[in-house]
Image (cartoon, rainbow, N blue to C red; front, side, top):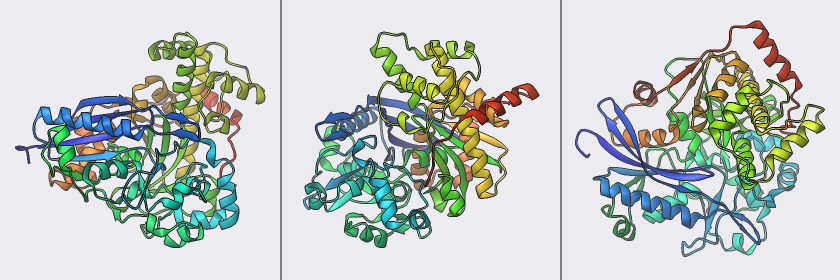
Length: 496
């Protein structure tokens, strides 16, 4: 250990940017310092939308160089978004850049797989929400390709980064549980399901749990970064939502969470999956959490809608600073129009303001004109989706929800936090903003013996991180307005 505290590097890859953070943990202390931030920009190739994984790995290496300049490091951990993967050949070389989950190659594939294997059977084994970009459907779309035929190993994105850092091969279980090839009850790969899908089960590496060692830095990596060869790399909760949930500062029963960024992941932490037909039809997913817990949640199209609007406006020369847009949204007419954020037309990149307006026309609502009105529509719609999802999660899991913890980048958005509290009629605790990096660091610190179990980790977050509290309006007219807005939303079909 580096003195009385541990020093840990969290490489946190998000769908739009990556960052490398330095965490210091010990003796009631938990702090983060940003070492390096870099963009994550997909590349449209002739055969589809791909991730620039070499750029991402280069960003991680630059962050490790900064860590080396800051002093000693006890461990490194990597997390990222879910479902996407790289394929290695027999020599361990990457067979092309991984596809982006927003690529359209899976259109119609999920329905074909579901019809062949049965939606109920897939849910019984995997417990996953039916999303067209799940790994299993991406692999089905690749059936018969030369790339899949040459593949010998499948690595999820954080496992690929760990492989390039260490040379070792493994599959961390929280991310593995998002693939549609993982048995949520046994906590193991479903080789039977893989075989029925025509996939060689040998593609799937041995599983690792959060806290397991994932090897040491290779000499070439050490030479480039300045860190010692063999510096430990630790498997963390490598699905970024799983890491974020580790850092939810819930210290009492009744807590629900919303991990809010590009996506809003809204749900509950349970001891066992909910695999009922009612749960499947409602579109809820059961994903592996730390220590065998289950993240029972729904994926909601989150602040992606706002960021795509801003990207479109910026490209057209329209002012799109976030502070100005939020101020305009706060002044815009309440509940003029609301949409379902999960409507299929909002998934792909494009002209999001016009798509939102078209959705409002189609549903017979006023069409938002100004950017502020569009942003108001987006935020009220997200708050309603948070309310709808958490209420349904509580019903299906037979849990009473008494407060909402909103973590991630969305915790900075005071207007969204306040709207979520008012819509749900529940207090909202906002923060920490850097929940994913904190969860990454805490799992490494626990592996090093510096913190205790999950309750201890969350108590440390609650004591050391800035949190904001939002209390819902105690006003019958306000509650009635949210109820009326909720009744106007036309939710998209869930799991047929």
